[in-house]
Length: 424
Image 1 (cartoon, one colour):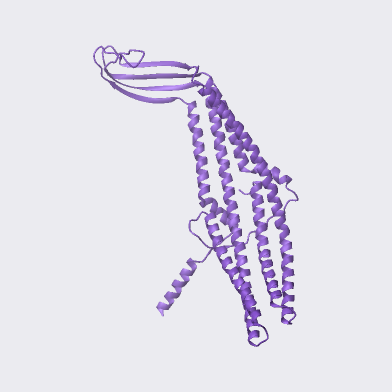
Image 2: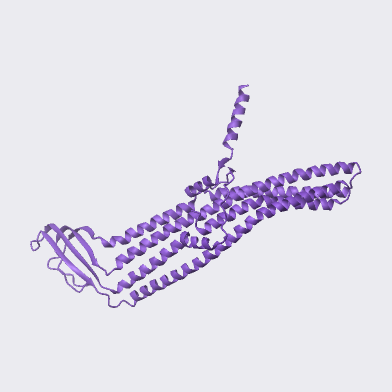
């Protein structure tokens, strides 16, 4: 008795452990944003771009380093080769610090900092765009599972209904009230329904795999999905939607920032042709030295670098940066055109999907009536099994179309929100 109770409890525990997780669309989106590697990678790239700004901004600050130097030399020796000057080498041990500071580079550093900051903003906008891409994947996969489940129910009902007809016709054929041809046609219809069921089962498993991947899971998981809330009213036209997309799409903001970053980089490269002025100071002590040296040292100076000729390096870098800025501007224009097109196409698709809701409902109603009439005519012997089979096929197709229409409309609305920039 105890063993039986224990077996029941273990079975119940396993069943509970294997029960699908209850999930809403909002919860699925939250899981994906937290778990999907694409989102994590985009955020890490944005954080790395922010560090580049800090790297470039270091040019504003002085550099400080310490030195410890020991030297031994032959008496009365000088360096005689490898340099224009012939400094004397003294035996010594010295320590000290050196500080350097750029006084001005005529705007090069400030433009590099601005360029890197704009690039970091572009990376952040790219991360926002990646979030939208992942959310669209989640919506597509989530609604795909619901659609596959609905089609599976239709397939199961179709198999059950056609199995009943096969049983009825077989019974009548055994009583010599129907021909063997009718039985064959009925079995063919049943076989098609079973094939539809097998495909529906496979589509459902594939849809769960797509959803698992969209949520950031490596293994396939099953979920108990809740019906999403109905989308709002569809606008009458796409004019305002296009205007909203031009302001809200993160890809556009990223391209604008990249264009501005390229312009600031071009200014920075242009400043290479100007002089740069820097100062340097050093100080230290000599714990061990020759008698001709003091026990302390200090010096300071200002250096002015004036570029004269370097094989057209600076002019080529300036031209390259300007050309890349012009290319970035054209890429921005192209993206604006494509977004305008995509918004209009998405609105048209959503409008068509909305119309299909009523059309598929009417089609299903007509298919049901046609099947009822065909069944009655067949029962009365006024038509053949072919007419009944065609009516069954039409009803099954109408049921699938009607079941899919709702989720197709929800998906098209999600795509429209994505194109407008409202899916974030």
